[in-house]
Length: 213
Image (tube, rainbow, N blue to C red; front, side, top):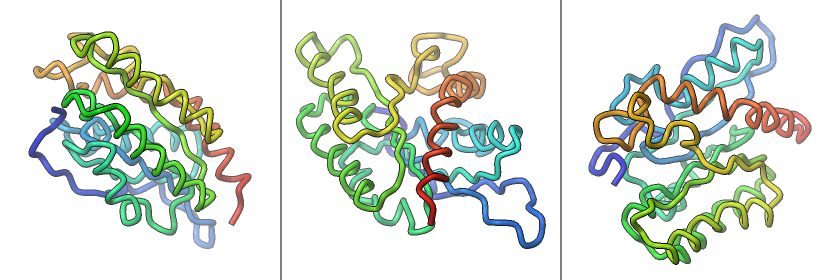
């Protein structure tokens, strides 16, 4: 499983660029996920939330990205801690969960139900969401893969949230972009993920701004 047995501090916020006195607070995006979000095997400043925030700040955007990733978490685990992982001051959420479900062979119906409830509860809070999809490992068999892989586009369409089909796109199975376990991206792999995901995150920010207070 991804980062099994390793607990990573939740809701760690990487400081944004200094803001002028009296400026509006930075927009807060919470990255809710597992070890792929938490930055398993990487220094804190190389984890996905930190690198994403840096990319956004370099574009002149006043944004904070909170690291609400916990290694080993399934979709059900993410649901169980949703309320305290996504605090009241959150403006938008990136949901990256399900990799451990697939690696453990958890029934896709259970994964779907957990993610469905997460999206339902975030919708009730009027929080814009970017859902990052995951794919089942090929060794799980055709039936499992079909059921699991369908979860993300189905839910994204049903809730009208932003959708990135595969969080590890361009990184999965690329030896030079993964750590020795073949599962967790290196710092270079994280940078590939950030670059590919960035347009969707920019749209997420636009939706958060349009939502207003």
